[in-house]
Amino acid sequence: MPLLRPGQLGPPARHPVYYLPKADLIIRLTASNVLYRLPSSYLCLDSACFESMLSIHPAEVLDGRTDDNPLDIPGITTEELECFLDYQLRHRLPRNNQEALTVILRLGHFFQYEAAQVDAAAALEQLPSFDAVSKYVLGLKMGIRRWVISAFTELVSPGARQLTREEVGLLELMPYHAIMETRASIEAHRRSIAYSIPPMSHAKGCPSDIDCGVAWKLEWKNKVAPHLMHPEEAVRGRAILDLLEKKDIHEVHAACRLGMVERMKASGVLTYEDQIVEQALRSLAPPA
Ligand SMILES: [Zn+2]
Image 1 (cartoon, rainbow, N blue to C red):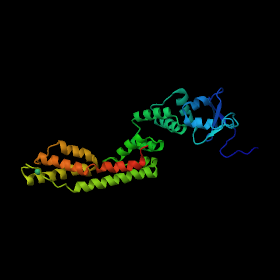
Image 2 (cartoon, protein in one colour):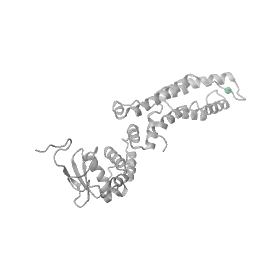
Image 3 (cartoon, rainbow, N blue to C red):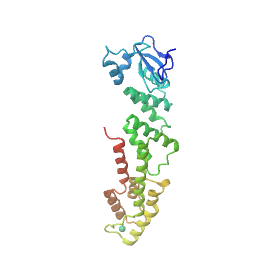
């Protein structure tokens, strides 16, 4: 009885649909030991990966011409390739299936099919179940910068909820660490400004330095600090600036209030949290 090579469970099976008798390229998925027979000209059409795989030494390459000598592809399951070929050869895009769309995106990336990646990404973005953690994880793996930026910004925004155990499980160590570290830096900064009330610098014409100054301090303590400190009332720093700019504060002279807003804008104290996020993103999603 002949010995089987490791991972090879007897003779390979032909895929019931995608072993196309008239096609010329035979592929074997090593994980499942299943054979596919596919039209190489079609596969090469839009895939830089297949093109380079099949065009380097065409005369010498015999792999992929017979069942006994297929082109081996590791790391892909039968279900995954079937889902991908349903899209690539039959134009079936499973719009409501996050798992299937993720497979098409991943294999599109692996085989370097631009259209598959674009279609799957656009369909995923439409799914309500496609949350920030999935977007962040997949964005990092597939090099989709806009996903990393928007999802990470959401995940570290003030008042963002705690990650669930399942979500933590999806994240690799570095991306997880980046979220936790950024959240901690932002929180520390916000706490420090919540407790140090910016001293009022009164404008010309302020009717009462004392009343205006006291009212400003009270406003900061009672309205601004909770936005900075309490997760359920959390508001981004630039939104706090907006509120202070647009809303009258009882007994605070308008010119004094607007002067303070200008000073805080110039100092960047309330927008520093955006810089913390930008800095983390520079290493997570560097510009191309
Ligand atoms: Zn004043």
